[in-house]
Length: 525
Image (tube, rainbow, N blue to C red; front, side, top):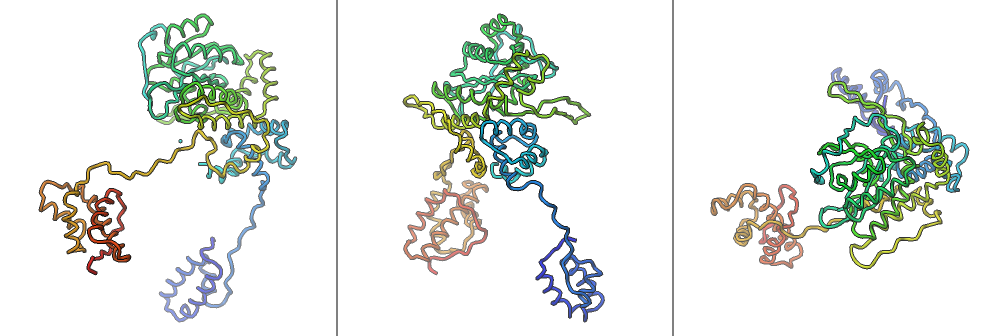
């Protein structure tokens, strides 16, 4: 049975109850025995023997602790790999370890002991989450829609269930605005595309929200894709549904479709990437101008490789409905690159090219570049001369050393830091007791033990229909401020009565909390 109290406390309890138990009646013995068994954790029969002095108190037997399979060295190596993966969950990190560990060793960032390496690759997803539980605990930030009527009759509608099992190259596209808290003026946008079959995601910045700029950015993305662009699904925004976009898709043999208005689940694939990729990288701050767009372009150049080659993601396998309950089954997490390599419809030459790129990429260099550009985005001034881009860091020694302790600082993405709000020291509503406060101060000087409720009833009687019941709390706050100042004057002897009244009148807006019934001090005391 689980021990309730310490060994020394249990021995003192036995000494205190021994004589009383022997001389007690049967009913008292039953009561004492119940309490002693509950406190000590002993079985009732053994507790009777201990209280009668027939046995010495002993500790309940404890099973030997199970030996730990994963030591601290394994945990520290796992923390470094978790940070290098940009803090993915255990279910996504497990399949990534087979790719990430060789990549880190190939580029000289890590040299694991064979025993630790074997343990690392043999961990389950639950074990990974359990070993990272303490680390993660330290590290724990409505936009209106616009529609147009234009070309809706020409562009067909495609819902979420219409995709079925498309070939690589069927993508959804959306625009993410970096406007901050205010949708006003010109600000930078991110054009985001994701492939339905593999989850391959591409992002590119736009200086403004314009249909022509969207087509130009789409052309750059199309030429960089590892597969031909076959189909494109967008929302009903005017930057997508326009003659320029329709003409571009027709000339390049791209099937253009749109989602239903006000139904975001039709574009669930891209909406997921908007949060998991763009908002995770950039956050919700406001970005304006050419300098911010250039910084975003360099950040996306590094993040597209990091996300598509080193970020496993889940993919829905099937969804069944049983009444109101929906059951979902997901495929094992894989990176977009791995899904493309396993796809039978991919070009063999492109598969060979992807394998070569995957073997040459350094995940730590890509992550360091992302962090550098995130800091740069935070430091860009809102106005002034052009802000130069930072130099690329070729020495990753300090960044690698920081991965083992980065979790102690909590949030590591500079774009997710929150600015502290300044304290409010001003009134937001007119003071209803400003005109009668001198009268109340004189009343308090004569009768210092008056409560806030008594003073409020006095005001309601003398000034009918001037004070509402919900203003009682405001008067109680002012009264507490007055009593605090009176107590200070009593202790220090430096404040006069009029000064106390003035300070209470000016400090009444600070809305201090109340401590219940206070001990009121009279000025004459």
